[in-house]
Image (cartoon, rainbow, N blue to C red):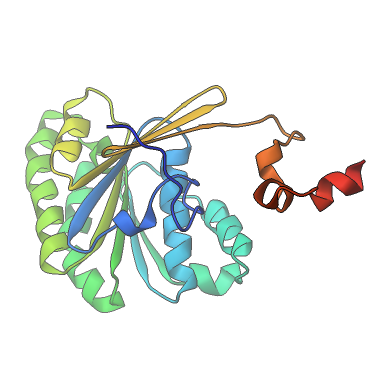
Length: 225
């Protein structure tokens, strides 16, 4: 089944349905596109702007506070106070990630967080020791998600590597984002969204608001004439 959709809040990549992030569920956003971590940053920004505290675990040193600040500004909020609601824990080894996930329950209770975001959970587990650690870590994360009624979102490169496959196999929802030149393709369960970006400085008729909706001359086009 293929279907195109536009969510009620197009801010998350313009194509991911925000209502699909359900409590007690683990969502994986996978792919090599920069839009993958960007979706996490915008999701965090949306929740932080509501005054909610978020726990973000970074397994690839890819946390970008500037991307979140831009998203917060876009929504009309002040970045400094909003960013204070995002609590970041960085892991540089598989053992550090193990310790962070083991302490996750305590952190959620401390900050009363409902959203946990994990950037590239499987990234650090390429060694033999890492492979032994990864399965119980993933089970621990899912159990914590379910028992504390959390929305947990994990990013993955989504390749054929065993770690990426394990993450996707344990997820309640898998969103795949592919980007090839100007084409952005998002597969979210049975839903397919495709979007063709236009070069900077160019617009399409659909980008003008007013005329295309009402069958009238659009004021932006009138002013440009």
